[in-house]
Image 1 (spheres, rainbow, N blue to C red):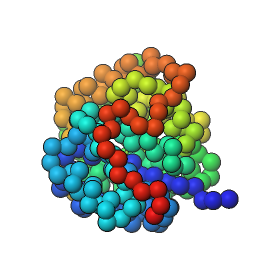
Image 2 (image 1 turned 180 degrees about the vertical axis):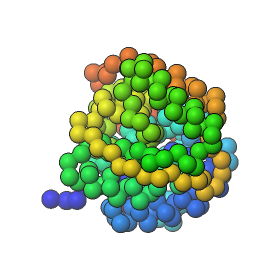
Image 3 (image 1 turned 30 degrees about the horizontal axis):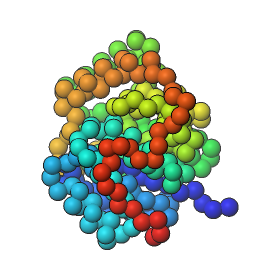
Image 4 (image 1 turned 30 degrees about the vertical axis):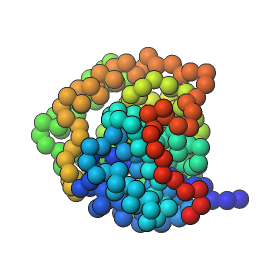
Length: 250
């Protein structure tokens, strides 16, 4: 029986400063977990040299694959596009941002729990010590409000998670744009576990989540519970993907 294949999916928007630092770290971790896997870098219509960096990474090492969206569509859409493309090639994916704030060593625990039978493993922050006072306050208030409104979110979990092929297939039946992915975790996972980690300060660049985007995310959380899965799942390629860099053979 062959070993399961892992794809690490990384949404990227104007990450020309962060990617040269984080890409080697992602590759080193992939080699310890699944040398036959891939790192899928999804360029969300960046206006800087992000795509050029992704192309160079792919040219230098086939462990790096790239998806380029035709225009900026937002973090959740870029991540969804990467996950839906990866589900046709991988047995499991781990989604993580490009800035190395999420402790990459938490992937060890995610992979171990996946191998023991979990279909979804969520990274959960141990503390918010690296956040500003405003971000800590708004985050606590947000989770409290969402729970009062009946949303079944995992506390202090964002988009750092492992999902296996079956969970991704269930996710694919939610065909709306701009999905609130963390709000669907408990609906697509059947055996869910968590891994705790400490969030670090950003290595380079700046946060793409402005207050306006955080408020928009909160609004999506309110409507998430009303979504119904469609009869047919999404296809392999998001219609907004304009270019793909991928080699089947390593």
